Amino acid sequence: MDRKEFMKKSAILGALGTVAPGLMGADQSKRKSTFDRLKENVGFNHLPNKEQKTMNSVIHKAETRGHANHGWLDTYHTFSFANYRNPDRMNFGVLRVLNDDKVHAGKGFGTHPHDNMEIVSIPLSGDLEHKDSMGNVAVIKQGDVQVMSAGTGIYHSEYNKNQDKDVQFLQIWVFPNKKNVTPRYDQISIRDIEKKNAFYQVLSPNPEDSGVWIHQDAWFNLGDFDKGKSAEYVINKSGNGVYVFVLEGEVEINGEKLSKRDGMGLWDLSSLSVTASEKARVLVMEVPMRLA
Image 1 (cartoon, rainbow, N blue to C red):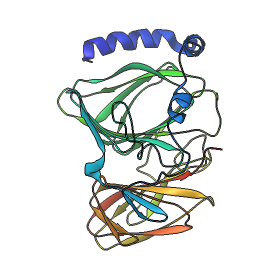
Image 2: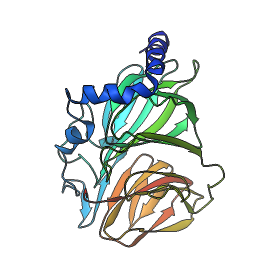
Image 3: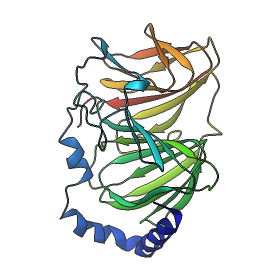
Image 4: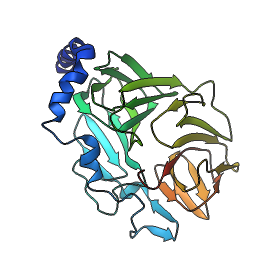
């Protein structure tokens, strides 16, 4: 979608304002909800597959991800999404979507609906313009974390703010532990909480904790490590698993080497140790392995 069409749709979206949730209620009666549609195709635990390495871990190498290039959007899917369908790669516990998106200059996602899903965006480079039916208009960039609880329903659009460079970001969907909550939006800068050679929390279930919060017993941590440095991650809630995603560099976990954009899921553990084989940046997502 080009910017002219986007701005036209955004103007309509802005006019909806707080009326949109009521309108979306009518729409939802005619379509299957995001939650129900995605839940149909998952098992709320890991699925044994060819990439399983041990009894309690699975590795997804970067080159095995689903890929689609739409011209304006170049995207990689760790789990099945859109036209990428892999029965062995549907989810990791309540972590359902992990998309690595690059949107070209002056392009973006037009206005579209979501409901009953916790949606987290982490920009890696560039500036992402956001607008939604709750009246939020914002730009998120590297060093920010954005969260939306879609709840009873929202419309939103995402667009590359710049005309001269790409924007790259992770979009992550987590099944909530409560359905039909009041939609909400939040974004923070992590500049004041980031640490060197240690994990730092950017998301939790608790509004009083560091970072943003969601309706799920999930914790996200980032870690920026120099070569040779190690850090331990301790599980917050018994029974949760962790999905480690390497943003940059190379790390070693349980004797397995992971490179840029590799992912590793682990369960039945109380902690794990991550060692940087070279300068690295890592995202650790701790999530329930079953839907409550």
